[in-house]
Length: 87
Image (cartoon, rainbow, N blue to C red; front, side, top):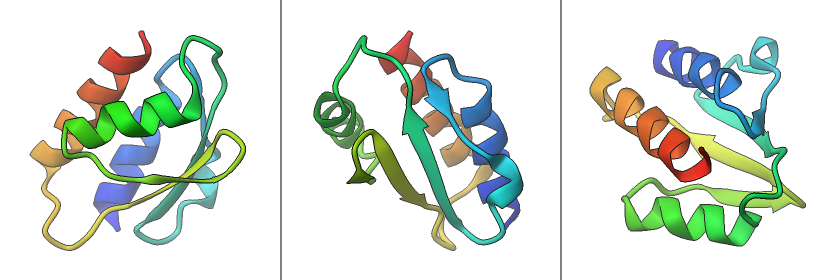
């Protein structure tokens, strides 16, 4: 679950997102949108267009999973795309 830890740390460093990275114990990550620059729906749709797929579990809260085929390069790309989308 090292990739999930790397992803959680990266998410914690992106303005507009909140995550409790200490709670990431598996390959499942929950994080929150904390900006009004973009709606949750716009965020999910924008990322889906980049082939980064996750969903909203409750208002402005998301679930993202790192599957076994996900590489460190995929994590880096995901973090860059999220950052570009929000900032």
